[in-house]
Amino acid sequence: MEPLPNSRTEADGSAVLRVLSYNIRSMRDDTDALARVITACAPDLVLVQEAPRFFRWRKKLARLASASGLVILTGGGTAAGPAILCGLRATVERTEDVLLPLTPGQHRRGFATAVVRFGGVRVGVLSCHLSLEQNERHDQAGMLLDRLAGLGVDHAVAGGDLNDRPTGRTFQRLAADLQDCWTTAPWGSEYTFTPVAPFQRIDAIFATKGIEVLGAGVPLGLPGVTETNLKAATDHLPVLAALRIPATS
Image 1: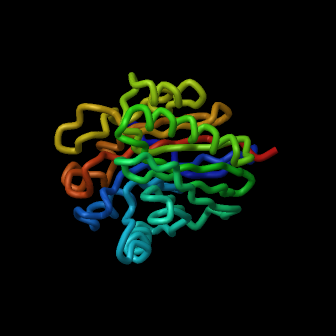
Image 2 (image 1 turned 120 degrees about the vertical axis):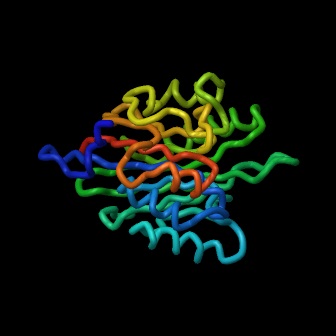
């Protein structure tokens, strides 16, 4: 498998960023294996789903970030599960955790959002975990698009556990307005669930159309990302994307 480009700043001021989206199942599994997978992917940004939300959740998430060479950017319990981690190259402009309307009988959902800078690049970021119920999930996709538009940036990245396949109307609603990074530049493997026998893609990274997608997919075969670690870490496989983002005008 050809390697994804490493993070770098280009001569024209654009930046290549590595973005990872990962459902970590509240860190109920092997957290050492989880940290090894994240570290091996060398991400600039990690869009987390099912971060710890309850007793001492900040301490647990901070421990994972530290073990992966990252820091907490935003989210966790305050966003009902989604979170964003980042490397020290990032300069944080602002963050906001958003709780979505609660449907009786369903889990509370939310978005972790931020605007960050990498050198001369300014990018909006959103992590999500959408509903299991199809109508609520479809509505949340619209809220996601509205939230990205409201960040006030030219370029944005969103990722998460969609609980929907590419043929589903929620997935297609997002892909109509944004680039589905796997479809745009497939790399690695496609299916994200389950780690033991992957058979469907329900996790994805999306990018606004001014961003160049250099490659995206499940990093099976990436040095340091072993099947043993992937199976032990959580009940989803991660999605890794390399994106070239234009300099802020």
